[in-house]
Length: 430
Image 1: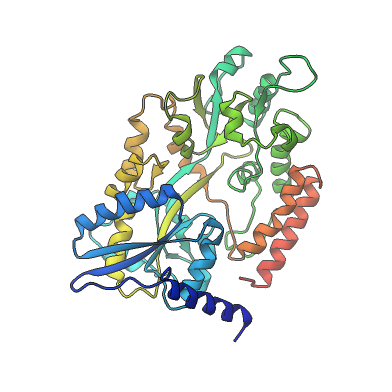
Image 2: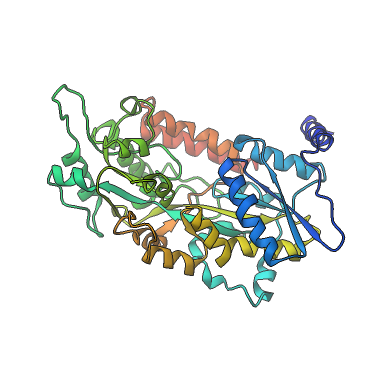
């Protein structure tokens, strides 16, 4: 037995001994499902006080017990430990970042038969682009619960102050760069920039859009080869990084002084950011932001593109209650789950009718005028690809981080990233 497996089984035994990973006891006449999820206070409150009770009221013969992670960094490690120890949950929550880790392991229940045979479920009620994120080798392995595209948020007061035209729906990279330059100012003439046109964080759910807009790709569709060493991919990333490195219209990490890009926008230090609808939880809170703001599509390069952020849920193949697990999965992604998620302020529900109703008739009067751009971006939005070798992929991404910090040229970072990812993929490491 390998040391790793010995450790996992020992950890599983410890969990059992402490009661932390114990399988829920079945009550006579009641099916008990175990649902594994993140342990943030917000998630615990949403599921334990709202989503799960609502489901149980509608399904009196089913009880759902939530098992939470030991912390977000240990989320996948604990789940694998539960599986190895024979105490796997029936369902678990995934995001666009960790989902690709699981399909190659063969532990997820394919849902296509349930989708075909369930007269109450219509795949057309979900955006294909979001559903695609939970498919692998032609199989549907989960259902999305909430999502958002990434669009541009801009400070209308700063645009007015510097007499910059508001972004138009068909604006280009050239228009975007011109606006960034016109919005960047040393207001007190001390030799240091006080207002920047944009913020360009090195997040993997942001920079891929600029690669795609330039005609490049991060990975081949089958995830068997990284293609970040092509001229199109390098050029797209270079345009994005150069906004701070050479154009000086976005703050460098040193100029940001540790502030997040949303903080920079809220403090009127940057005029534009690329963000998801999850920001509404912060920017619409209370009286809202102390300035007028609105949304614009991502600027078009050689083609139009943006990224998705999403969450969803999967059923483990080992479940002894697939029928009941499917009902809970449908609930989380369906109209009632959408209603509860929206009341909690979570981006957009994956249930398409609810998402479209919300975007066209926002409840909060502080919602930006062009909220609909989040939905319009769905047609050209994509999930940033992750191969199954997620740990190696994330380690290779340190090359990109070094480029953002100015420690490595962009073209060298892209080539090194590509080599490291391809070495991991070809070695079948996962």
